[in-house]
Length: 171
Length: 267
Image 1 (cartoon, rainbow over the protein chains, first blue to last red):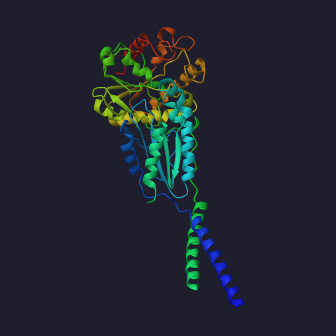
Image 2 (cartoon, each protein chain N blue to C red; image 1 turned 45 degrees about the vertical axis):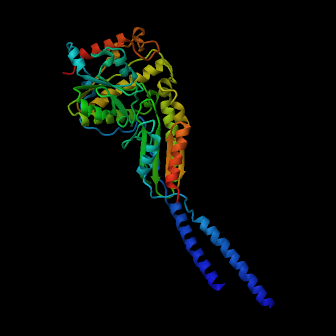
Image 3 (tube, rainbow over the protein chains, first blue to last red; image 1 turned 60 degrees about the vertical axis):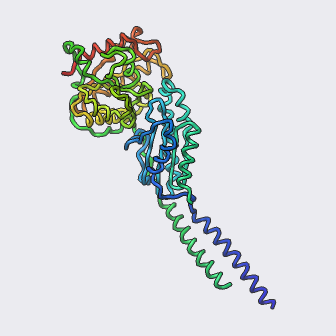
């Protein structure tokens, strides 16, 4: 009896250890909470329809960001759209990257925003000083394999990021 | 119990394999390096034709008259937009000869061909290429360089390539348009710029040296040194041509500029 009791104890310990390891390995798989199959174009269309009640937006052509960086090879798709009015510098970018490159894309975009601010603030301050804070306070966020940036007032940034997160959240 | 143990072990093995695979992918996958910002020593993008830059300068001619000015469309920074405000073109403050947007200014950048202007005849917003496709101007007079100059001075490649990009977009939309690049106007005040007025004017002179190089590499492009009529002996904007802020121009300055264009005509 004593031997059976010891055997059962061992089994319980082993079972507990295996369950713990199973749990750890599930966590280590790094399962994302975000989809990876939504196109940047679909996100931009949804965002424009929500943000565009007051402002007209247009999609940027290829080379729009050439002054700052070349699109890296790990970007599978991207789109940038901006306000058409010359005195409104609102701009939003969506970059879909391959697995593992979200952080690097975020750093690239943060660098772009910082350099754009330094490059443009002199003449923005001369002609459209109320717009300069948008670039100064611009944000970049990652949602799974999507790196997103927004140059806009705080409310519009929050609205935009909320739209993106809702579209990408795993159901 | 044994079956349960077996199931757990199998699931564990599958998850470990998946986790290891992901870990290996994250370790070996490396992003492309960020392209360094271009420097003045970097080769500019190759463009066709090889004309001597000095031959692109428009030399003195007989007065080509008001009809010559009437055949021009102007596109540039605020000093170009003010051609309308000063009422110096045919049509006065209602002229259709000035392309600009609602901010009344522009900066030369890689996004210049994406951004919109207000097309004067219809009031629609459209890109510069779309506007040129509709307008098919005989002459397009461009004026860029002061906005963003403290960045351009360290990025000749960026300035040249962005100007070439704009020229290319205009020419694709309106192949027969002759493009005239105006030299950057001098200033007599530094405004919000981080450098003093003499440094700013020195930067302006440097950019002006680059314009013939741009024109030489493009088809159907010339340079008009309109800034020369505005400059005093110290290289600053003459006081009588300043509207008060050291940077923008008076009505008499624009009349001098237009007369220079008429007497340095491209015909």
